[in-house]
Length: 376
Ligand SMILES: C[S@@+](CC[C@H](N)C(=O)[O-])C[C@H]1O[C@@H](n2cnc3c(N)ncnc32)[C@H](O)[C@@H]1O
Ligand code: SF4
Image 1: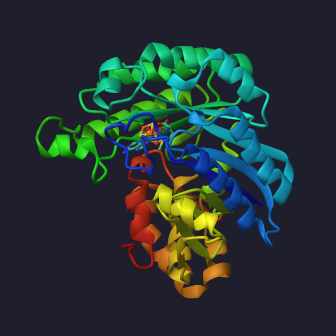
Image 2 (image 1 turned 180 degrees about the horizontal axis):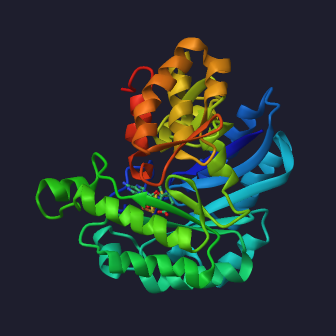
Image 3 (image 1 turned 135 degrees about the vertical axis):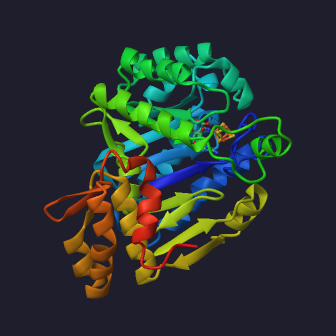
């Protein structure tokens, strides 16, 4: 079982915090769609895995014309072995979603919408240079619900000047509209972003860690009370609505990443496409797959297993470590995990180790302590 991720590298405007790969010029739109379709075909040679998820991500995939969404799907359908139970998600920005667009989207094979709401606080939206208003966000949710049941929203916490009341308002959305899936993101200051330069010039200041922790716990308590399952550190879903795509990443399933900057994983190797639109198009036009790759060592795979396992409800299995990595890795994990069990940051259930509610916010730090050699 595997997934296909398609990176659509265009946005209307750069959000202040984002350093994903995208261009705000649509000049190469047509050539890009053709190159993406061609890469899909080139990568299918000798590929036998069954595909169970397709994810149009970005950038802003809702900038795609409906015909291009369909053609990209056709290229996949004609060249891969698809599961009967495919999850097909598209990331959409609220300002792109008219009723007509949603109606047309609902007639494609897409069966899941992931809406970039981020917050309903208009001051925060302006601060983050989002193109949409909270009014557009609400309309986009209401319109999406007319055509789709499986809807996810992205929310950002830890935004400068934003308090718990504003966060509470964002969370009430989920309650009011019975949103099935919520991905939460702690705002991070990425290199070469406007946010970074605003902070360096003291124009904006990020909240203190304690504040971010309080917001994380507020979200966690609020959504748990609303019967969301916190199946991954920052992901919440109603029963039956875990994202198959996201779960695939956490369960270390294989995926093919198509498009500039897209990452792929085949179980042993991670690779990433060139992050340059015109070079990507030129390479694909001459049948060249331009990706850098890294073959994972046994230590890398163990570290990734511990990190992804601890972030999720599926946890880390001592037995799995012993069988797949051997005695030294097993003993290392057992020794290192003892203090976290004693401090109640980790919980052990039979053979499975998961992070407790107390430890949730600290998951990445705990995982790093359990790595065999700390990741760079
Ligand atoms: C890269 S975007 C793509 C989808 C779409 N363009 C959007 O903005 O919703 C996916 C998610 O990553 C989040 N994101 C990107 N950079 C981030 C950062 N520095 N901190 C927190 N969230 C971030 C976005 O806000 C969005 O929810
Ligand atoms: S957050 Fe989304 S819309 Fe904003 S720049 Fe990043 S990819 Fe584009």
